Length: 276
Image (cartoon, rainbow, N blue to C red):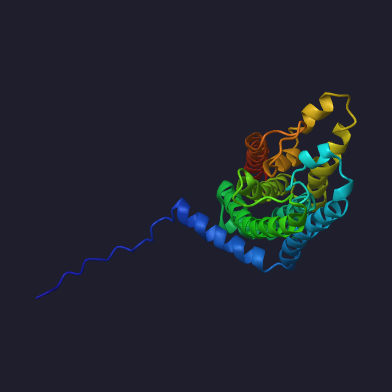
């Protein structure tokens, strides 16, 4: 009696879904990010500058409180000086965001990254998501710490606010969101330009040089244009007093989100069209 053996078909593993590819790419980006020494130093600088500079400027304002005019007292924004360090912290976050992309181009590791994740748009999304998560954690710690320390300094002058006061929690979260969005923009600039020096120069020009040049324009053009610059939009997100040369918090968020979306779309297009 003979037995007929049916050949077994080779089993093939199912093709990975986009969600699995995204998770795998995000894990790889997290490994890269946490094992680079510059990440730790940049995040420490972000924390120190946000809390330290805010506390320093707030303490200076408290020391000259008796010399303030009545108009200055009533127009005082208790969070303006508390979050003054964000303007410095955004530079360190920006440089680190640029390095997330450009460091791989400099070392040639980008070829391996593209080989592991050929879906370049998905790879960019994984880099932005991973970096933004880390920045969000550090930014929340920094902004809440700066808030409570600076309000404690203002308490003897009865000029501080409570986290439960209208608009205050929104302003603290807005300060953290400001840094997250600047970080995402930086990743996009790094992906589009691929060179650290050029990307950092563009980022610094947008955040520092352009606002200074705009102030030289005749009024009211200077104030109207300033409202829509990334730095001014970010400041508007963390303010509780409305200033004439700033948008309202929602407007600031929309403008900064618009810059972020446009930058990332340009970056995704550049990644898709160019070789590594």
